[in-house]
Length: 87
Image (cartoon, rainbow, N blue to C red):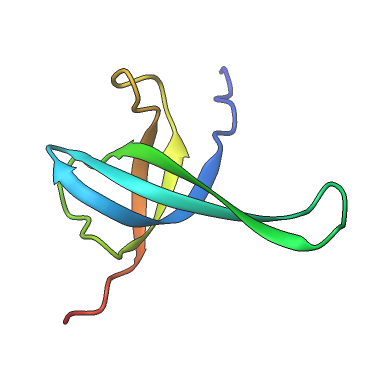
């Protein structure tokens, strides 16, 4: 039986859920500066598929790599790690 390859996963915070079945997730990573070595935070916004439309702005979610679902969507929401605080 053929083994499926391991897919990349990232953890980020939902910054937008205005689209149908799509959320924008801000993924941060901490890397040393190339010249000085100081740890700096780099961020990237990724669009992810949210089939049940359960994600709200501020939720911490795990996303996994998937096949291209649209022009910009290459990720899907796997789980909600932490719900946003109700205001």
